[in-house]
Image (cartoon, rainbow, N blue to C red; front, side):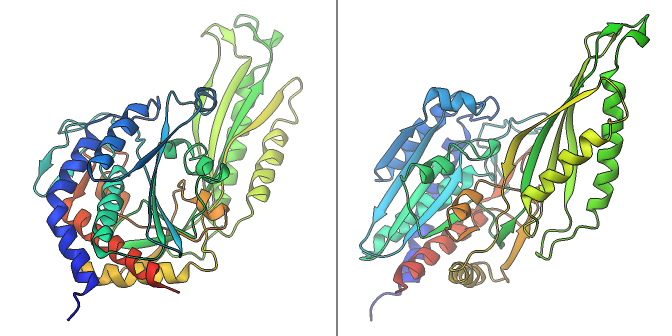
Length: 410
């Protein structure tokens, strides 16, 4: 009797799991905080580790001026291609850049410490874990002697700033043309949709004056309070704008940054605000932006001498299901239930990710990888970020088996 290919994949994942843990520890031990975004050294180490697994790694350094335009210092995109024969091309994308560790850690953020079956470290769940998930799933797949299809690993370093020079650039330059994409996610759900995100910078300009003669100036901060009041009133209306996607509630907005003024004894002539507007999968991003661009100057129209400039800093489109993606979701759910013994839901999340670049290119895309049910459980972007190592093992089995099944499709 011929060996069961799924059982063979499971056994291979089990056999290489200790090496997989060491692989992930090494990735965690190389900082790749973004900001400041000096990530080339991490790409060097990741490529060395991948080559140690027997993979050929393409290194695609991003031009220094382009990196600087996106507020980073250095970055290199990595591609591993495994072509077994004619057939579908499946891309697996994870990002190696991470948010800075911040305060409150009980372990060294870059120590790769293991306690009680969990690996701790910045980026261990979001999403260096899926460098390991995808690499070892592909390593397991290599044992089957497949003759059909191609699997590619896309390992990039700019997700924390939107993904334009990571997956966005790989696709724009034609370095990859996948038929399906699986991007970094968690083990107990398949993410099929997520919010978009609009960042606007609002500059409120007045006229500088001595604080002893405030009537000779035009107070930009006073004008900014009118804009803030209008924006917060607008935010309250967003609680009534609901999504039909399970896992996403309503549209949101946060004013996350404000700065301005010259000194305590000076009438401020410039105040700058930055806002974050999350856009539902069902919304039209252009309409959402137009509403804010109309609202903001209207709030200060009664104030003579006040000028308002609005600049778009970021527009990340929502992720939504595409035709041809149902089979990908179905297989991931079935394999997830087989491995984890629980129902694996398809759902949406209110965050945005660089996975949207694949969907914008017309590629059916989902998020699936190693981790718990929520970012909160993982400590993602918080102190003591952690990954249950059995979730890593299980997710690797799910991805390996999913790749096998999809590559057999005719």
